[in-house]
Length: 443
Image (cartoon, rainbow, N blue to C red; front, side, top):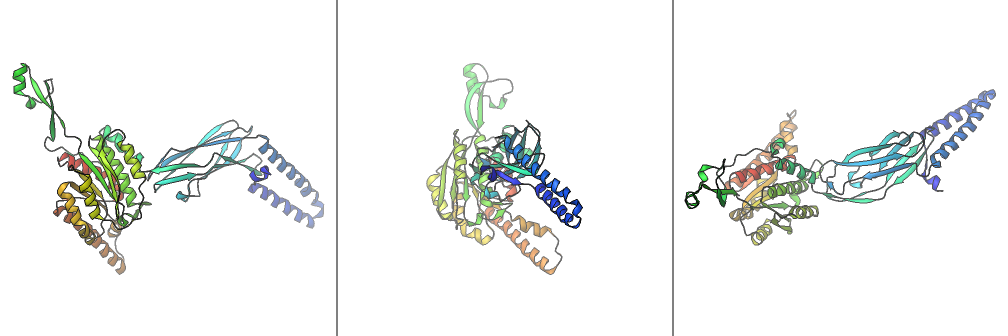
């Protein structure tokens, strides 16, 4: 019974049966030919039995193992590998079907290959999740055919495994490595010259070749009878908070992901960059009420805590309450900080409802409002209009784009920093803005 459950018929079997049926039908017209299909029939049955025997003679003819990361990176291509080993004494044809999580809605994870006897092979493919959460992989199905090719034997390898999808840690690591090696400009990060000194006194030490003579401390030099200089370091430990709006305005999709997930990915990256720049990073999420608050810090486990906080964010995409955000920030953040507010405004009227609360935040902190361009509308404006309807649509699209620019002006007029960007440029533009404000000594 177990053999029947794992035994499948190939197309070659039906093709042979079709040929035999045609030959038997022909023999009714030409009776003298009846002996040929009879001989071929018994030969076919013998070959079919032999095919089944060679497939099942080896108890475990194929070994397969799926290698999947402990966690997947949201919005990135994640590599999945399947290792195969052939224990049959002959070359086999394999059809490998991996049971990937239903969230991907893919039915093409199907690989065909041939494997020589006593050899191994590795299949590699990528998956791009677009939502955070738990993803369940099933078993790896391997269908094996012998050189005869009439039947296939099915092997079910492995067991179900759950893999969590976290915010884009691949993107975070890429920018982290570039920041460490001072190569951020390779990904579009601007090289910004620091204005002023923005330095704080650290200690007095003896002069060594290369020290700036302008930092010589003459009083200490007189006391020690040797040249002494003041040693400075960059101001440190500024607080950088990512305020993530989880309201309905962040539900809009782009390239399969919501604006909220783009904001979460960018928050992870900018938090890591801030900590690398010796600042403190924290997270506050909100919609109709305050969600999660993680106090700013730069300890060794801070990035792990930030990643866990961002991974566990869930939302009903309700109307955002900026008054609750202002009250919470005033109560929880006492030190002047950089607040990166990830939200979205589609019209000037949407901004005007929330502007009083953003202004109150800006009285006590440096606020950067980060919102999104509508890329589909931008594409519509760039395309030439070929009809009256096209001209009408293009005019409306230009009005929406103009409103976005008005929002930027309105924020700047209130002394609030504004960053209008497309979702795919969000991370780069946010890092640029952070580095610009840091270079200008505003934080």
